[in-house]
Image (cartoon, rainbow, N blue to C red):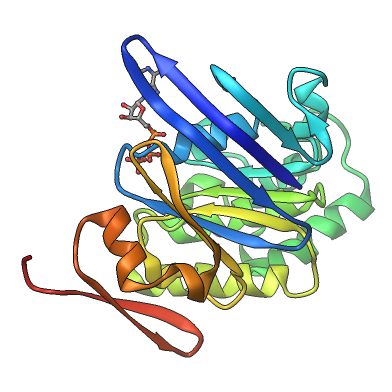
Length: 258
Ligand SMILES: Nc1ncnc2c1ncn2[C@@H]1O[C@H](COP(=O)(O)OP(=O)(O)OP(=O)(O)O)[C@@H](O)[C@H]1O
């Protein structure tokens, strides 16, 4: 699915990535955690082919970047990042935004077939927004917009889903509703996933693995319960962190000073 081998990235005098290795296999759902500026978004940019490493290799969906047309690979990747909402037209009705996901169009200029419209409606229903399909996208709350993007991404039935902090800016209620939608939408799909967040409690049961980054390196990677330990979290966050598992989710407590 994804195989990153010894990725480095140098910008000017600075090494932004210092040898990143990561392997994501079929059906695995990974969370990428780490402090601000440690290189998480840079790794995502490399996986989506928007940035190229100074050295190392990137294989995605069985193709090595540099030897393949990345635009073809991108068609199989659902990518929900912070920039997408800004590019969409706020006055377009929600269903049109969703339909655009079928070929990653920002706007629809062609006649939409009844089947495609029906598919969009079904995806909207899965995220609980069927009733809002005629409403202009720009009138939706931040949480609703994120769910529309999720429905939109599913239209192309991607093999890999990449999400960069999708819950940023959502209140607790909206966050939990978004995570419920994500769980529901992925229940009967097997796509692999890489999800960046700053919030460990977003690691809902659908996630299987965690990679911890610190200062341009992956300092731990593996099944989530093996990685979310006080010792390994300390190595990434430089803080004493306790983890308690409840309802198959990790909840953290930060200990008092060191
Ligand atoms: N084009 C660039 N030129 C120079 N430095 C860059 C460039 N792109 C990113 N960086 C630097 O690389 C580091 C890693 O950035 P990146 O956005 O990947 O971090 P991140 O882990 O996603 O951070 P955050 O959690 O704050 O979003 C940052 O210190 C950033 O300033």
